[in-house]
Length: 487
Ligand SMILES: Nc1nc2c(ncn2[C@@H]2O[C@H](COP(=O)(O)OP(=O)(O)OP(=O)(O)O)[C@@H](O)[C@H]2O)c(=O)[nH]1
Ligand SMILES: [Mg+2]
Image 1 (tube, helix red, strand yellow):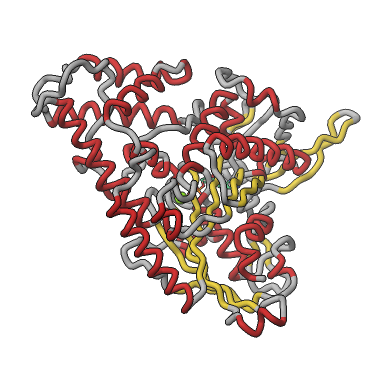
Image 2 (cartoon, rainbow, N blue to C red):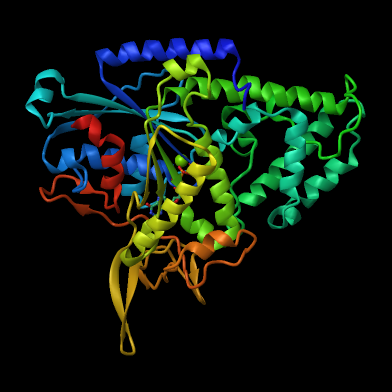
């Protein structure tokens, strides 16, 4: 990790930061990064957060809202012209009008939400203009997993990819790529078609690891999974060559070509992303789909922990370098949030929260992250279920009620996407220790039953004017991420 960025990079970062600090004096703003691996729930989280703030949703744990100090919240033009805007209106239309989940988003996007508020203290009211702009930046967590690549050369990347591919939980998925890669001679002449075929197979292996049944997380290089606008460019047309390397690299060989592209990927893709986006963040929320991992078994949970460790390492401040130490904006709060808690009955929310907390604690320790306040929460940005009980014999069983997505099945029943049903979701274990001690185990946590639900039918707010997006503990997340800046 020593030669993370060159001196010139550091200087650029420092200048940028000074400029944005200066700008911050004019209009107080905060940059909130929202990340998580694909399908973790980033788009739904941002949409619901913004909707709840603009339309005065029910947020009893968000102090500024509860005490009526928020005059209004509204969207403004975002400050960065080169970054796509977060398509808030489209996503809300999908959720509210069509009751379908928004389309997957594959790249970075940004939205500026401005909150006009009244300070809680007389002192604060005298000095504060009472306006806070929150720049929300949505970006794929996969891209963060590339940071460790900066400290690695191509040979190390090849070695580690080979080691990962031979883990029991991955070996069968990697077989096709490994066979193809082992069949080529790294010293043969460089050839575009061979490079492309290997890159395609490697990407297919990474994608297979992400499928529901495996739910694996640690899969760099991130852009092979999530190319953004770089799809097909040479900087993405590379793959590790798993053979033991012997002797010097022959110029013009396949190995030399792959090595050069790997370096180009670091220089032209990874570094600019960190410089332009990550170093400017003040706060960060990392969404994790812990339920999906639990459902796939402890091996997936261990993998999620590894990914979370790599993600959190990216937010470690000042890596011993004077320039970054002194001048970059520091991320001072990080929230690790398990999404989709509405798949569980509320009695289990605390258990899920305990699991994310344990996950976060372990990842924080392994990433040697210091200097930022870290919290963990189990939440649902948009609650798709309500709770009830079903009488079975003499027992009242707690159930959740919702509309399963068309095609979901429970036992022999297949749902049509229109009818409601009650599901007994099962319980998370009371003793969570064993979940973390059985990293090689791929059996799902017993007695959990997951069905994907449609977004809920919405209720009107008390004044009847707007629709309310129901949630679980979104207000707690907001309080941690923004509360102090609205004090
Ligand atoms: N029940 C429930 N499901 C959710 C919630 N949030 C997200 N989901 C589900 O998770 C899926 C992914 O959510 P997104 O917000 O699109 O996730 P993302 O991280 O933006 O995904 P990408 O854009 O593909 O990276 C949705 O289609 C829903 O099925 C939630 O609060 N409750
Ligand atoms: Mg998205």
